[in-house]
Image (tube, rainbow, N blue to C red; front, top):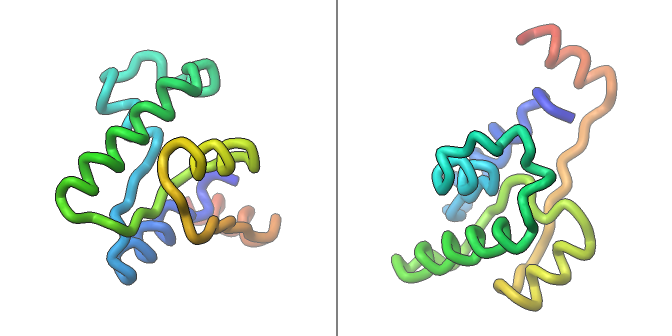
Length: 109
């Protein structure tokens, strides 16, 4: 769920293990100054894939080799397509917490 600090944990992992950290939503916001962002699920997957491929290529041209993608992939099919069409990966992280922990996080905000 939202608001449990996943972004914070991803950022810490990226920093500790020197991953190049990519947030797919940020790619869309930067590219479009995106009035469409509330309609994220309706943005064609081909555009999301293109932006992600471009971001990874730019980072690779600067010598980056390890990436941490936030909120991607969101399905097994996306993971398979990513591996076939963009780049191979070694692992996928899935962060999860209990409902009680989520409730506590939301109350602290």
